[in-house]
Every structure is written in C-alpha cells, then in structure tokens.
Image (cartoon, rainbow, N blue to C red):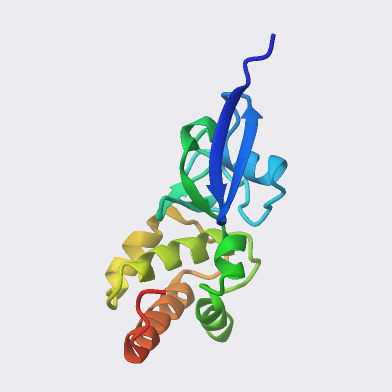
Length: 164
C-alpha cells in the first residue's frame, strides 16, 4: 500500500511535481529525486549544516525537513545560487582566504553566507559567527570563513551591491 504524497516545489527556479514518501527528508529528495548533490548529508540531526539550503530565502537544515513540508515552497540550493552567479564573489573570497579545505561544509556555508549578505548592510563579525552557528567545520577554525564573508560584505557595500 503506497502512502506517497504529491508535492509541488520550485527548486532553483524550476517547478517540480513528484510523489514522495512522507518520511523522505528534503535533502534526500534533492539529492535522490532531483540529482542536486551539492547539499550533503552529514549528521542527519541538524547540527552540522552540510545539508543547508534556502527555503523561501531562509537557511534550513534540509535533513530536518520532510519533502512534504516543502509543498509550495521556493527552494534554492548551492547549485542554483551558483548558476545565477550569486556566489561568485563569495567563492573567490573563500578561495583567497583559504576558507575552503576539505569542502564538505562549503555548500552549507555558502548558502548561509548568501542569506546573511542578502539582508543587506555589513554584518559584524559577531553577527556572522552567530549566523554560522548552524554550520560545523572541522578544518578551518572558522576565522577564514568569517574573514571571507566580512570581506565580501564590505566589498559589496563599497560597490553598492549589498542585495544580490
């Protein structure tokens, strides 16, 4: 007996209709059904942030959200952000400041950083650290990541591009 439920979601600007099991997590739906593997499955408890995506412009741990809960939502993954060039300067800043090491946490970090910067203005280092509190990185010690986000915010503000 199938208990699949119909959902319609917009992912990276494209509408998708699927039948999904009610227990399927959003991250598994994105990875398995839509083949969007940028969001990683890490802890499956919402602690590491490797699965972070934007749901209606808010960072969400996709391992803690069921796909059926995303019905009607607008979801953006790291692939979608990159495709529309919303991350070019952030990626360059991460590279320049050695904020990338193993790369496992990077998609979630970039999605979170994008959400921070989309608020506009130049966040303080403390605000950046607070926003990143849902992302776990074992390699960098966070300083380089905070540096990269702060530098990107300052550069965007100087160029008048705070809202990309």
